[in-house]
Length: 53
Image 1: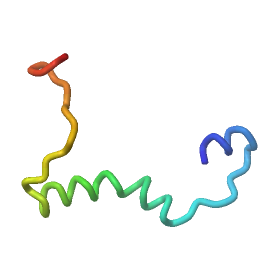
Image 2: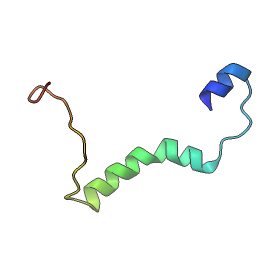
Image 3: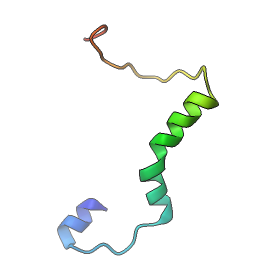
């Protein structure tokens, strides 16, 4: 979407689903991780001062 807008200068449509995914996906994941699936473990590591590679 951004690439085609930069190339052509025209933006024809953004669907409701696209806006929802861009704006609400992160907050929804955070909410459900905190309130619904308490013990859910994600399959990635966060690099920090204690476990830097």
